[in-house]
Amino acid sequence: DTAVSQTPKYLVTQMGNDKSIKCEQNLGHDTMYWYKQDSKKFLKIMFSYNNKELIINETVPNRFSPKSPDKAHLNLHINSLELGDSAVYFCASSQGQGSHYGYTFGSGTRLTVV
Amino acid sequence: DQQVKQNSPSLSVQEGRISILNCDYTNSMFDYFLWYKKYPAEGPTFLISISSIKDKNEDGRFTVFLNKSAKHLSLHIVPSQPGDSAVYFCAASYSNSGYALNFGKGTSLLVTP
Image (cartoon, rainbow over all chains, first blue to last red; front, side):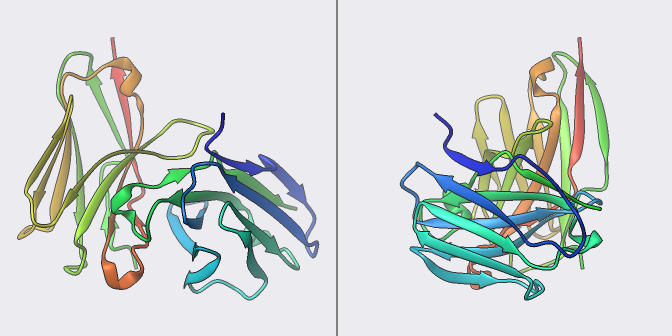
């Protein structure tokens, strides 16, 4: 039973399109995150939600909008996709608002914008 | 601005020997450090962590050492096994950042039989 699941695993789309990535966790965690791993392999935080409330919103273009309908789900919607958005996006969750408990990551969504 | 640095992109070690992975950081506000392991096409998996009030934490074959004055930490794997072959990410956080993890670029470890 997958703890943090992301869909889709691969996404190829054209510039200018709008796409969504879904994330669900069945661990009962109250905090969820989106991380981006770019072509240089850096993993950087984008957003963090605690009990459906936005906690961290790093310097991310407004085209990226997270949505948390409940504490088990954190979806990422991206408008007007650009070539530079190509990356691997990881969803993660933790119990408690803090990395001290260790994150559980999903397996990632590889987004390719052509 | 990369606040967590792993200067060795790759490391090759023989099975049974010790693997030492290094990590340096620049932000003195970091108070918690973690190591993650990642296999291809999978998400990072939490391995071991250490608080800034300690200088060593051990969990089975894995030990993390923290030298705050040098802003340096290291992960020791003893003995190394072929299944340890993966990319290892060092990460750091502090409470005022909302506990966001700052990751290094990773070190690819290859354990050869």
